[in-house]
Amino acid sequence: MRENEDTYNVGWHFNKRFEGKGLAREAVIGLLDYLFREAGARRIYGFVEDDNIRSKRLCERLGMRREGCFKEFVTFINNPNGTPKYEDTRVYSILKKEWNSISAKSITNN
Image (cartoon, rainbow, N blue to C red; front, side, top):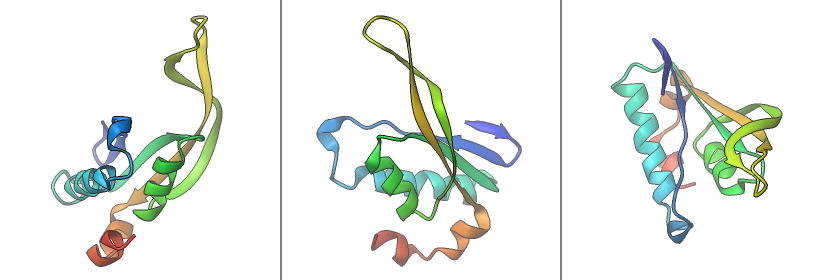
């Protein structure tokens, strides 16, 4: 989602059947590369729930840094009783100059 002229918020959700196959990494590399090289992004950030170990690891492997944590952040999920579900949520980001300094080899070897 384009937030302003040069800042984008990204996110992903994959079917559990496809976990551990490298598809998320490949897709996110393509997305970030497109946004930086074609769409003119200067900064890209995303939110990752604290218990989503795979997505946190993916962000870190792609050179994104953790900027902070929103405590009990609202989600789009309700609890079984219908009340809103709140989760601790991390913010990860990367700048174009950081993305450009990461070689394709270092990304694909992680």
